[in-house]
Structure formats: structure tokens, C-alpha cells
Length: 115
Image 1 (cartoon, rainbow, N blue to C red):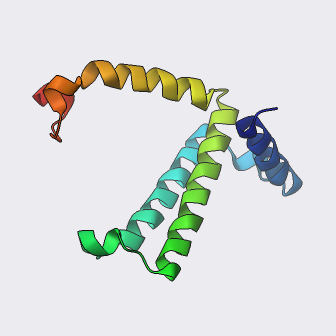
Image 2 (cartoon, rainbow, N blue to C red):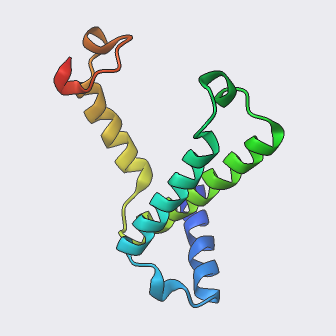
């Protein structure tokens, strides 16, 4: 069993042990994921660019925790919707290569339709 599947199984078991599976619809999990992403943003909210790239030990630990929460919800959603995250990511990278060819977007932050 690969690492992603193994983690998904551990998360599923954790949820089942607590009788939380009944709350884990794709809708509810997507909202929980958004909340965790917002909690990550909150850590950086009032930092300067320089500060955001030089986090204190405490700030880095908070980021670590929020990223883990985000990853847990992402894995749970992908498990419930039966989406292979690695395959989906590979496909999306291919799509993005087409949308953002190096010769058009190098050094630019424009959206693909503005290149």
C-alpha cells in the first residue's frame, strides 16, 4: 500500500473510531478544508514579505500544524470522492504546462488568459 493510501486508511479509521464518518460528506469536508486554509492564512496575515519568509520557531510550528490539518482534510475528501490525488495532480500539471508555456509566462504572474 502506498503512503497516500496508508494515510487515507489511518484517517478513515480515526474518523470511524469517533463516529465522525457520518459528518464527512464532500461538502462538509470541503468547508472544513477552507477553514483550515484560512487558519494558515491568519498566521501570515500581518507579516511583511520578509517576515513571512523568516518564520520564528513558534510560527513555523503553527504553519506545520495547519498544513497537516489541510492535508488530512484533502486526503479525506479524495478518499470519499475516490479521486487519486497523484494522478489528478499529474494531469493538472500537464494542463498547466499547456496553459502557461514558459515562453509566454516566464517571470510573469498573469493568468493564462492574460498572457
